[in-house]
Image (cartoon, helix red, strand yellow):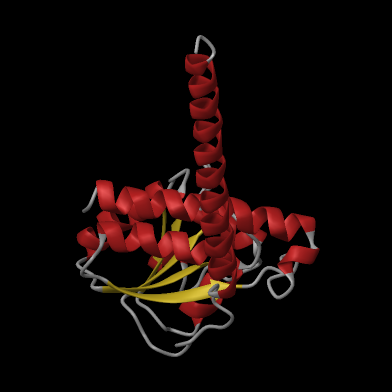
Length: 206
């Protein structure tokens, strides 16, 4: 009988370990399923390329974004262009020179923001939109970055009409991302950040 308490404690310890393993496995399945869903729902095209908005908002940080923003403003699809996330010290004239764009018709309509992350992008865009009295914007960022950006932008601007305008970087393999370590790592990272953004939107609503 003296060994009974030890056997009971041993069984209880094994049961606790089993419960933990089951929880970890369940979490792993849920996370993996969410990742596959996230990757499959990334935008594959610009669904509304010709609709005009009050503003075009470009989030810096990847290839093709600023070029797309310049093209859209030159097509007169918006009144003004707001570029969020520009490094300190970089001004409009320098960006136009880098991207070989004519100052005419752009300099007067272009504003720069200095945010350092997506949360900051949304915050400074909301402030600028309020100052301008605008009610709609076309959001330009990479396709893999669009879901998280929309969560953050909708959180601080729930009444603003936002038209996604995804950009598709050449080096990002969206179709068969799992075969490319760089693209796979980017999607995993972006998915985790997306989950954090969703959680933030519930905990800290606008």
